[in-house]
Image 1: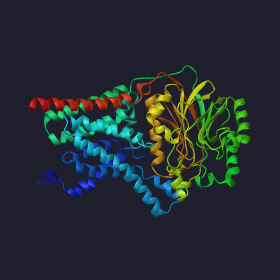
Image 2: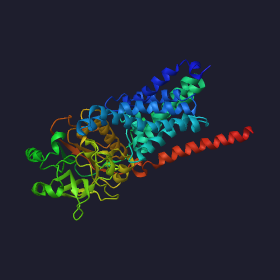
Image 3: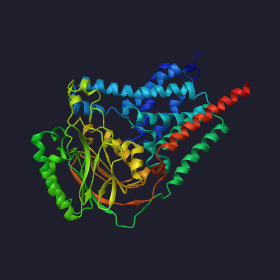
Image 4: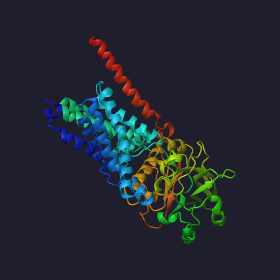
Length: 507
């Protein structure tokens, strides 16, 4: 009798349940925030991979990935169709190809799990979670990386949040996946002894997280909090890069400026002025002088061309007034900021000719911005979703700043997912995060990942508040992501050694 029939599950149900299991991860994240769905997803995934062979696992894993990325990342359609001017059929095709390509990583995960990890002692318990985390890391590293839709992001406000300053988002993903595998195994065995073991393991991790939430890893500095003003201009993306609209943009900023002078830090979004810094100095220099007089630092995103090298230009963020410094974005977004295989693709369709899609990546090890006497670690748009990049910078920073132009993704769930990831970076590193965007969500986020004040989306707004400079460091900022990855690899190696030892004893 086929295994699926013994379990009371028709093969057609497998085809339907796998994408559903993937979509449950999206349901656990912003803006839905139903965090138990991520645990249920892992439990269902474990169940559907518990008896299949490696060939079936490839197909099932791909279906899981299709459900995950189809529900959680299909917002790329907005930028392809609305702002990339691709036709509906072409934009839909490119979106499907994007999601289906990402789903191949889950096909590989499922194959590796069934072929190598599941047979190991503890493979269905700890091995599933360890392999999950390693594949989240792989997804953040492969090609330019897509570090999105991680399980751990669902737990900014649960007991597990206490683990974030210690283990980072990958540690939260491990505990979430482990909780799901425990749920599946407890249901599968249905024995009081097994139930007690799995319940004890899960409770230890969750209660431990609740206890860690009481730990103060960082403390406020002695000086008064910094006053900050974040300007969200809500400039229409269709007009932003039109030359004729530039005077209207300057007029809009002029009107808003009077309400921003006098704050310690004033933050404008990514590419706030659609001109190279060198071309916009006739406007920015008088603003910088006034900021200096008022004791304010203006931090703004703006394209930048290095003097003497006219062929290279950068997506940058600069500090003016009482501040100083220039930072060039390191992690560029494919097609949005550069075009892979440019000689072949450039000019093929409008999507491959988006405005400012020819940026050069900035070098590693750039100096931080200065805002008065304080060190500011800057991140532009996509960069804030890379835990290791932020952790390295946070060790030397008094404050974190991220700017973005999420207009590219319209009213989709993408910008709200992006905000959630910025919150996690603040929680991991114990630093305040200032997030400035063109059309939302702009926010002041405290060192515990809590939003203190935020804007609405799709509205022009100036939001104001305070940001504290925190002293000290969290373990996640000090050690980065390496301990979690090393722990996952070590777990898998120990299981392999145990299997080899048992095999030798049986012989």
